[in-house]
Length: 428
Image 1: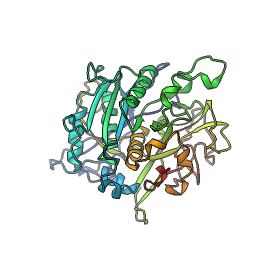
Image 2: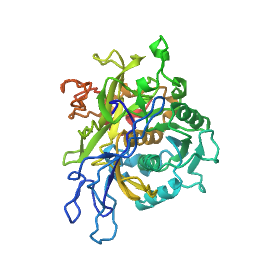
Image 3: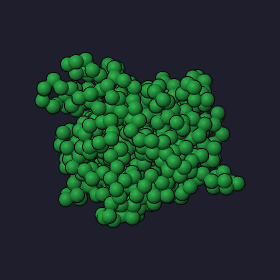
C-alpha cells in the first residue's frame, strides 16, 4: 500500500446502544477489543484517488434487545466541547455560510441519512426544501448525478455529519464527481467555488507519484494545481491515512491548501476535559498522514528544518476510528463488510470536514489564501504530543524522536501545529 494515500475512511460497525466510543456492550465487545481493520476500498490507480475505507469486523452491533439510545462514537456536543466551539454554535455562528464537500460518485440517501443524524443529535434540519442542503454533479447541475458507490457513500455520510457537528448552522453543498480521477475531482472543486462555497472540504488524495508527469520542472509536474488555489475560499484536504511516507499525499501537499492530520481524542479529568495524541492504529500503516513533498517548494510561513519542501500536515482534529465519530449511513453494500445504519468512522476523512466546519463557523473564510494564518496563531491551538506514525517494515521509517513522524512539542507532521482551542486560530 502506498504510504501517502490520503482520505482513507475507516469504519467500525458499532452498537447504537453504547454511550461512548469506548464503552462496552453487555457482551464486553468494544472497538478497542475488536479485530484489526479491513479495507473496504482498493488502492488508487495512477491519476486517481481512493477513499480506502476500513472497518473493524469484531465491533458488531449489540443484540441485547435494549432500545437504541445514543450512537457509539463522538457526536456534535463532544467535538464542540473538545475544541471550544459551544458558545459560537449556540449563538448561531456560521449561518448563511456554505461548506462544500467534494467526493466521488453519488450517495442516493445522503439527505435522508443526514436527517437521521441531525435529528438524533438534536440539530436543526438541513434539507433541500429549507435551502440548507444541496447536491449537484461536477458541472453544478442537480441531474444527472453520477452512479452510486456504497463505499464513497459512507465517505459522504461521514463528511456531511462531521460538518454538521462543528457548524450546525452552516449550509451544505455536496458536489459529486463522476469518478475518482483528479481531473473530475478538481473540476468539482472549481464548481463548488463557482456556486458560492465559503470553504471546500476534500477527504481524498493519493501519492504525488500517482498524479505527476515527467515535466522537467518538479513544481509544474502535479496535475490540476490551480483548481486547489482559490484565495478567499479555504481548500481543506485530508493529509492521508497511511502514516509517514516519502511520497507525500496530493492534493494535501500543495501550499495553497490547508492540510489536516488526525488525532486520538480521549476524555480526561484535566481542566480541558480532553487529551489528544497523534492517531496511530498500527495496522497496515493506518495512521495520520505526514510527508515531505517532492514537488512543492517550502512556503515562506513554514519553518521546519528537516523537510526542504512543503511538509504536511498544518492542523489536525480527531480522526482515530476506534474513538471516531458516530455516522449514519443506510446504503447497503451486498459485497461490503459493514451493514447499513450507525457506524463508528475515522481517518483524516473525518478531521478534514471537522476543520472545514470550524473555518465556516469562525466567519473569517474570505481572508484565507493558504495555511499561513494558522502559523500566526499558535497560541490558539492545543499542542498535541505523543504518538509516532512511522510505519514498521515500510522501508520509509523515520526515528521516533523526529517531528516528521512523531507528535512532539511544537510543529510535527502527524498533527501539524495542533488542534483548535476555540476559533481564534482562524482569525485574521
